[in-house]
Each structure stands twice: as C-alpha cells, then as structure tokens.
Image (cartoon, rainbow, N blue to C red; front, side, top):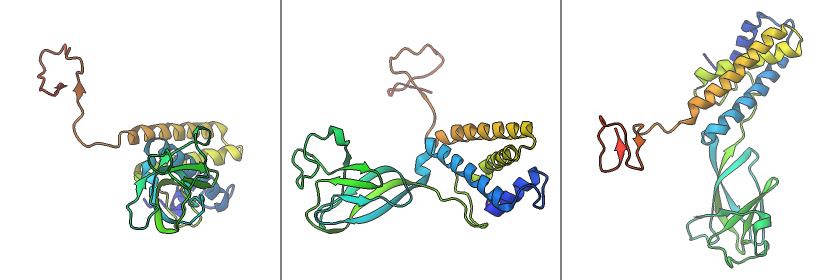
Length: 237
C-alpha cells in the first residue's frame, strides 16, 4: 500500500465508514494525520534517532562566533571543524556555558585540547572564535526534523512504513472520533491501539544492530551450566 497522504486519508475514511466527506473534510483528516505522524516521528527518535541523521557543511567567518542552525535541526550528533583551509576537520567537544572556566570570547585555544561548541537557541557558538574565513570548515551531523505532509503525494518517512503506518491511521481515527464527539468508546479503543503500536514499534526498533550472534558472557567464570563449553574468551555458547 502506498503511504502517501492521499492513501492514508482513504484508509481513515474506510475505517470511519465515510467514503465521501460528510462529517470530516479532507483538510480535517489531513491535520490529524500530521499530528499523529509527528508523534510517531518523536517515538522513532527516542530509540532510533540515527534514522533521521543527516549532514551539513558550512563556512566559518573571521571574528564570527555564532552560526545559524539548519532550519530542520533537532539534535546535534557531532561537529567537526577546521580553522585552516589546508587542515583536516577535527571533532569539536560540546561545552556548557556555566562550566566554561575561560573566556567565551577567546580567539585562541588556550587550555582547550580541541575546538568546542555550544548550542544557544537557534544558533551554534564555536570556540575559539575564528580569525580567518574558511569555506566548508564545519561539518555538522545532526538529527533532522521531519516535515508534515503538505501535499497528497507526500509520503510518511518512518522505518518499515509498511508495518507501522497502520498505527498512524488508527491514531488519526481516534482523534477525529474524539473531536467530533462521536463514538467515544471506539475512539478510546483506537487511541489505545495507537499507543500500543508506538510501544511495539519502539521495542522492535530498539535493537537495530543485528550483526553477530547473541550470547551470554560469564565475566566471573562461575557458569553453573555444566553442559556448556567455554572458550578462552569466557563466552558460553
């Protein structure tokens, strides 16, 4: 099934037994689909934030300390920076304003072992302050915000959408029934199904590294399973 806004809306109408608009307009259904979509997005970020990881390069400017964050910025994962065009970027360390023991307006490394940065509102502040303009000096790796579905051919961006989009549909149905004060008991059931789906999705996404066998490690050398064999690594197979 296509996971476009149009297809999701059709599924909502099917569940609500309203093939053509009567109680709910397309615009009302679109609104609830997007509200639930954003809730599902944040649930994914809780356990699988790197699904939305992206990169952006930007320049540094001489004597400028603050730089605007990307419009779709949500969380920072890593910042690399270079102060000389011929150098390689190095990882910058995060710092908190209250914990900094030196001047925040410094143009030298001083006691810093590497560059540092601080998030301040919609800006990122780097330390030391650059004394030279360098193109593509910063490489920011961050978790991006997802946009709402604005057009009927926009699709949801969640892992394994073929499995989890059904919860989004039920969540939208719950909101519509509740706001329309129709079938409150059914709305409650759909909302419970949606919340169950969110938890199930997070549980299934949490262990996303599936490389290698699962095993038990006996760190104390006190295995009570005498039918098992132990190699030199201390692992029990």
